[in-house]
Image 1 (cartoon, rainbow, N blue to C red):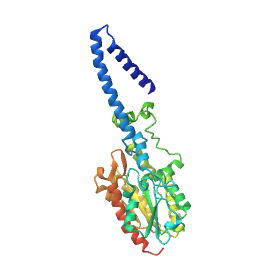
Image 2: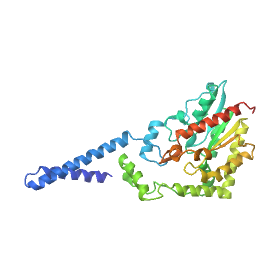
Image 3: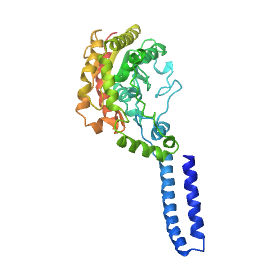
Image 4: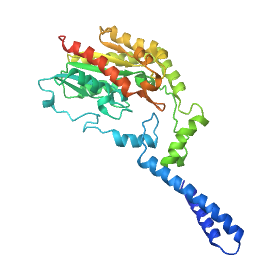
Length: 337
């Protein structure tokens, strides 16, 4: 990248010198025209770089610089690392309590205003008498979420809401050395991370020039195959049962909300059902499990996901889920543990 900048600067200086020389009139006129074009292109590039560096921000499923900008602008966490307010024990005294655990869907990846997340929408529906604490953390899995529940200093929440996403089985797969081996940044050229404009253009053009670069179809095929792998599934089933045991050890009610593949809700139904059956076998029937493939299919794709480059649930879909959860959780809060 530095070599390219130096070469571009040398070209500019050469054009200036040739445009100012007096010996060859025709050459001077021609170079003057090229210099005007050079300056125009330079100003456009500088303006583009400034825009994408300081103004443009977009969440993505890839480590783009635009996504880094988005995180800097919208992602603020408390001292415990959760995208939530600071909670102290006195804040939930004399209130019913709901803990929300999950991954980036619970944390609200792609959602600019945290109040649009399903946990916040649910909290608004439950009212001020209920403290809804969001312990969702991006990149976590079922094992991580069990550890978070065990370590959080609220010994007896009234309700625990587990947000489940189909990639939670990755931990079990990786424990057996099964890795999808997909790394879209593996061949990322150095210049693509040295300029915000170049980074934007690379991630817009490269997937068109290299089909499958983002890897969604390949990844989902691998992920579904992990559910069909009896060894992986047995490990993951035990992880889910360990989470159930952790909730029951705290004398809490459990509500599970299962997000489908937001790009292909119907295709993920068999795997959603398999996860739900683990909870149903422990007595958590449809009153305690919310499978969202119907809701996803009823909403157009462009409305249910954040953007074509971010397949997390949109604010509109989060609001729908939050309202549904509020209806169910309020019933759980009325039941004895």
